[in-house]
Image (cartoon, rainbow, N blue to C red; front, side, top):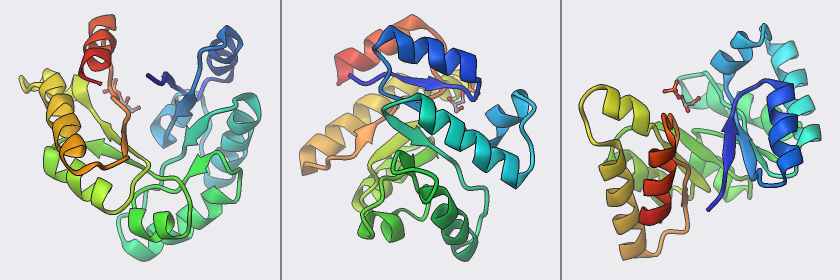
Length: 174
Ligand code: G3P
């Protein structure tokens, strides 16, 4: 089971890295803003600092909603470091050999499409599903079943984790 820290705070990332159990970092422009990092150039520079701190995969997020915009943003992100995943335009980037994380997954259908397109990771937001009286862990279990049925190698990166039992239950589900 891999552990990813969900933050853009360099001190927190360093602390987790020093524990020796960190497999990667998930971050995005909202988490950057919490640290006071705004503007495209500053965000890119901060992603670079994160990549320099950790050994594992670092998720960087595009914010465009159209294909051309996603590709243009993703092409810049993948140049920061081999640890960065191009996100969203999954097929384009997976065909080119870049690792991708399809985030903001709320349904099995989204997860299936992402795997079909060759995503390295999908990130189902389990806490936010629980928040709206839906079964976040049930989604993890359904995705696991379907990926196993068809041998998809896409890894399930449970996101929006709220408490330790979420982690334990994800470990049980696999
Ligand atoms: O940052 C991505 C995801 O983990 C968000 O979690 O706690 O804002 O639902 P949360």
